[in-house]
Image (cartoon, rainbow, N blue to C red; front, side, top):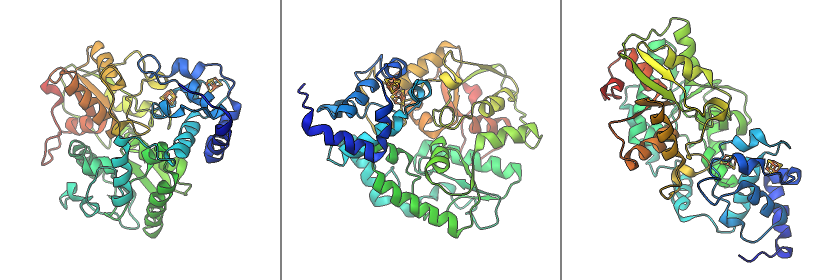
Length: 391
Ligand code: SF4
Ligand code: SF4
């Protein structure tokens, strides 16, 4: 590989100006690449990416799409380098130069033209609800932010319905957004398209303002983290798992169904765990389900492995042997669990894909904690969310 330095020094400056100032703090100790979950299975090396960024080296594009923004390395860097900011800045500078991979072009194109990454008709955003659930109006307790994935991805519309039923049962007043909102833009920002992110964000902020939104509930940890960290507005944002756990403790929700010794393990979504520090609430829900034996995987909580879906990974093809979600399914099955629970629609999509690829359907089920809680409450919705005891 050729490495020319001088013409690229201005690239290093451009990366810092795009938000990657942390480049300057790195002293190349290698802790980040030593802890990154991709290091053992791909050629991606975060320390090298930073080095190439510092020196503006030719060949940086070989590494820049490997990071799934899981935050594992950030938590361990002895210099407190915000590596995700560097990755995002590098992508911003280089994808602006036409280096966006083919697989991400459709994703960005759909966000630009339709405001969602699933090529969904914007007017059909709330079709999943079939008119059964309310749209938010000022004065309601919560705006339930039904993200693009739970609105357009057929598997995850089941999660939207399960969450809606639980909100009804908890007796709070809530509504989903009208169809006139955009994707929160989290993955887009990490892919490096800062300009389009601002456009999507501003339209959503206008919606929040004109509808006097003060409390937002999410089922996607990606929306949670981006509303909290990147929108800069004054409102409370909570992940539904935190409220559900509280409602169980308060006796507002009483799990009834006996799962008969079902063994369940839990995967911490990176954006709920390391990005948002929510570790206990989903576990408390699982422990409250009658007849469930809860087991931990060896890598859990702060040490949890990434599913690979963040940072644009959900829309990027990975070769067999290079998928973190496959490894995670194997870890989950190694505990003896027949259900892998999580609390993120991206994780669900990644894991269900791996279950098919690994041909282990019938041995392990992927469920959101919301779906398991609904099942335990013995609530029927028009479309079954599944039966965890069926395996
Ligand atoms: S852990 Fe921090 S200081 Fe060490 S190489 Fe990585 S970014 Fe640089
Ligand atoms: S954020 Fe996660 S995936 Fe990205 S470089 Fe750090 S450890 Fe690796």
